Length: 130
Image (cartoon, rainbow, N blue to C red):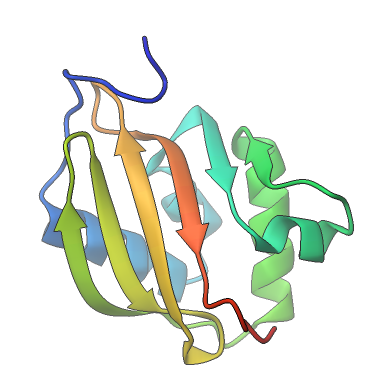
């Protein structure tokens, strides 16, 4: 399978996916959050290097990403996401939302043939304050 494009990608309805994903995050429920992703998911985020203190732009796999997100939920115990809008691509969805400290955030999710996220990339304002 080409990890960067799948003509057979099963993209869930954008509103359903966004609601489920945001509800899981707002509940701070890691198992529910992770259920949206394949076991071998790759996460790209500019915060990874800042949070982990390494020159790293991505994480791979449920366990590594779960540890990273658990640390984030601990650092931001009142974290709450608010949906702004969704956009649909060829084999992906983008969710535009207010995230950390209510700053505007965009996240793109690429889906596989089973409708699970195999790659995701997060975009923050250049002047993100965390």
